[in-house]
Image 1 (tube, rainbow, N blue to C red):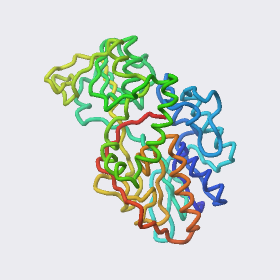
Image 2: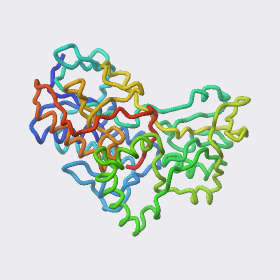
Image 3: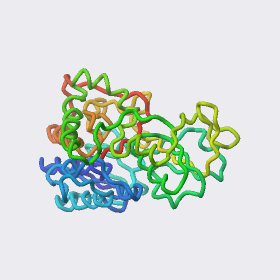
Image 4: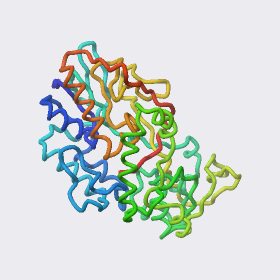
Length: 380
């Protein structure tokens, strides 16, 4: 059994940013990444995906994203950047290590992965906000001849059968996938968008609006402001505003908006207005939920989400989270905001060293977010 001061579970942007800040503070660590390559969590998304934030906002601490500042990187470019980031700073990474269980044996944390085990004084959970696809229970009741994919498994239209497609969900993933499928299939889309970016994505006006949105998401909508605490519960369950593909684009492409899917009738999707859609395919863009069942510690609320203060778990000294939705601010789970939370957690770890118990400033607000379901937010 290998022993480390800090084990970071997850080698995505949250884990890498935390490792960077720990290294700056000369604290030892290791990153355990389930994929075979750093950046594969991006490479495995749908083929046509581009980030929604421009390259100037997509870099992690210490290394700007290469390329034109106002370009929108592909998923491969993002994956390659994360891999290059780990190499540039010589971050200690173990790939192909899927963590099965984390528990505390009274003296230290134990991290198990198959037949491997690691000991650590600190564990940073950086597995991301989009880990486990969320599907309604009635999905299994649909006709087995209907091709069903979650957005996590969708790559391109070639995966689908000929015939109509029902896309469930009108977040950014749902809008992008429905628009792409409209070129080859008849598409119905279930749901209603929460809001839309008020300017055309990538336009000159957007270059002035995006910094304002970033400022609001970083400085105004936070756990320390009254408006941030008020909006936070809704933010956790609502789809993000449509950024690139808007309602008008979908309508112009022939995508028909229908009410939400409420069940199954005669093996087909049943809508809230009583209609039944005879489709050959269903793409569930219904979001993701947290899955921390592998953390064998009493640190979760009834909803299943961790009780923490800015990522610090007060009931389990040495346990931390980075990359949660609205962990500290509205941008905590995305590239423009993850670095700040990573810096805070690294500072906490460095301040208590390996064996000291962690105390949390009394001015911070503890959160155990409400519903377990978290809508997918592909905002970069």
